[in-house]
Image 1 (cartoon, each protein chain N blue to C red):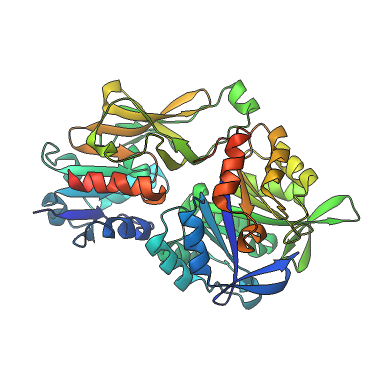
Image 2: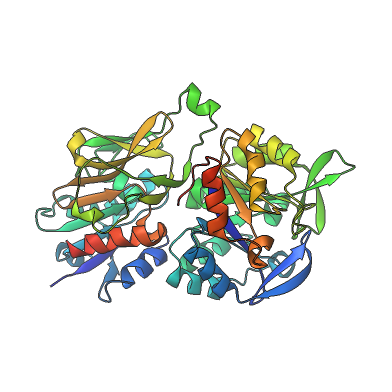
Length: 249
Length: 208
């Protein structure tokens, strides 16, 4: 199991919202990124959370700086609309890119990106929100807009189109520290053949216990409880190890 | 006098560059044949697909150059796909010849029924504990528990098992993770993305 720290970034600030809204400034993203690397994070996930709105990703300087001092994989998302956009991020130090909004309106971009950079470099980001208490729909523009896509069908589709991993974020739980939407996690786990990163809602390290029913939980992304110093990467990893997850310690 | 060259054949070289910079200030990124012929330490990175990487090497006349170096003297480190192209052939995208510097072939990772039940995935993405078969200076100053970061769907099957320095366990599979023949080394994982321990491996290679 990989423990990934997720950093949502607006402009030059690390921010955190609740259900992807009401963004609060936390601090300098590079300082936090370095701290999580030093504490044993397995990967970093950097999301420019206003990029889709402005139509461009602004993380280049932050990634370049991060890759100077951080030697774990870095996934970058937000506002990627073309092979060119992706290429620029790779050249700035991204190892993988996460794509959502553009793929919703033009799913073929996943095939194109996978062909150009290899599936291993393409993470399909899915923002799932429950509607009418039953089905999940895929949202875009950082959780603001609802698409017509049913999350379960969409997860299968991005896999077929060549995504190498799926980042599944529960919009309902994101930033709430109320625990994962386990029904969503279970459903995605049962249908996907590629690795899945579960994101949104972790309230404490003991939440990991819920993933024990999965025969293999690939990765979780953690944000709020790290940024607000309620726990640390090393504590989470120790806990995961104690309940017999395969973690790097 | 050390002469370090990162073979430039496309892809993101930034992380590798930054990792090498930790130990050496003097190195070049190049596809120039003379630079490569005069190098003492060659990094052969590689991201993407086997066929595309080989056709780039052929186009730049690098295939023959890399094949004909004297690896009793020159040190080479192939990383990820750069390790796989050291072998004779790969079945990725139909059969394709590699550099043939180490005997063996590159095959898709196969999962058996139990592996599938256990939800093992392809590509194999994540950190794995390196299991050493032989001691070697490439392991100097690394921890007993040496974890490295892997992203791959294919793996190298060696003809001579003594050229396999280390493996990882992936379900029912033992996959080669570090190979070595003469002064040619190959890592299936990304040392430049494997934290402090990965940096040690790069440092050890540079000390050869």
